[in-house]
Length: 194
Image (spheres, rainbow, N blue to C red):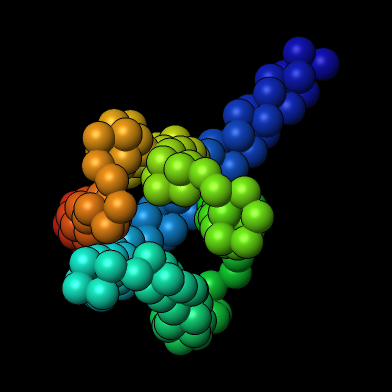
């Protein structure tokens, strides 16, 4: 009887070991893949923010902020193309949660932007940069990756401070720096998980 109980405990320990190993493998797989996503979105953020800044600065017209809608229009199709290469890899719970965090961020940022443009003026850069940093920090926590956590914190908190100090078109440069941080994070993650 005592031997039978020990076998059940061993099986439970083995099961936990297998589950832990699967979670770690899933986390590693996501991190290997996420480097290129950080780089993609970072480059898009740099390009759109610089083009937006230059056009606003030259013309004095903040209507150029509509260019931000080009980011998801370009980025999401490129992400779909990148994901086709990994279509044979099943989606894990962790993968779906990371995707849900970023989808929620995108919906939040787009909705707040539209509200700010049409109805309620607000410090949109401040709101979006804090939410962006927060989404990145949460992703880093779920993935147990300090590079992502730290860059999210720097982006969110540093961006919030900068948004309070800069005005008009100059606030767009916060997103340029944010894009550089994303690219750097992507390169760090890619080097960690070759």
